[in-house]
Every structure is written in C-alpha cells, then in structure tokens.
Image (cartoon, rainbow, N blue to C red; front, side, top):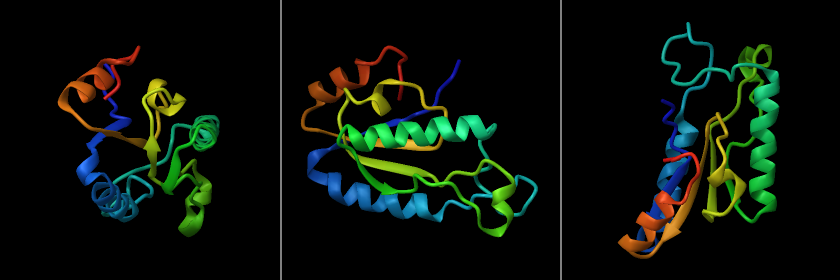
Length: 132
C-alpha cells in the first residue's frame, strides 16, 4: 500500500492563512544526506525521478497552479552530489489538474480550496489512485 498525500483540501475561509503557514513549514524542512544530524528529508531515488517531479511542477503551473515555494533542485552545501529537491507547495490548485490526479512520487503538495463538507468529500473521492 502506498500512501503519499499530495492533495491538501482547505476550506476557503482559512485558505490564504493556511497556505502561508504551510509555506513557512515547507521552507523550514532540513533537506540533506540521511546520515547528517537533523536532516528531515533526503534525496529523490535518482536523477530521472527528480526530472519527472520537476516536470509535474511545471505542468501544474501551466495548468494554473501557483508555485508558492520549492520547485527547484537543491545544490548548496554538497547537495549537488545527489538528486535533492526543495519541498514544493502549489496553491490555487483544482482537483482536475495533473498534479492532483497523478502520483508524483516526490515532495510536492497541491492545496485545493473547497466550500462545503459535501464538496470536499466528493473531491477527496474523485481520484483513480485514492490519493490523499
């Protein structure tokens, strides 16, 4: 079983506030080599996977999502020796976007606004893969 939440549903009344708070959290994630102290997120499995993730981010932006933070390869402090990607947050997403409907297998989250409980249940269930 694979369980990687890539869709974040947020009620419209707190949407902007939530996105800003999540942006701050994403930017605080310590990315690095797993043997280093305090590292919270390591590299992608390989260079090809890193490129695939970056393609998804590009597609999401082309489809209308807003890149809030991340979306780029990390190379400072020796990270150029691996396939490191900054935690990536997309906002203003819709449930029909590629980034909301396909498995990305990388550190990318798309925030989607909803109004009612009925709507968010419908949106959450509208995925071929049961994506979170």
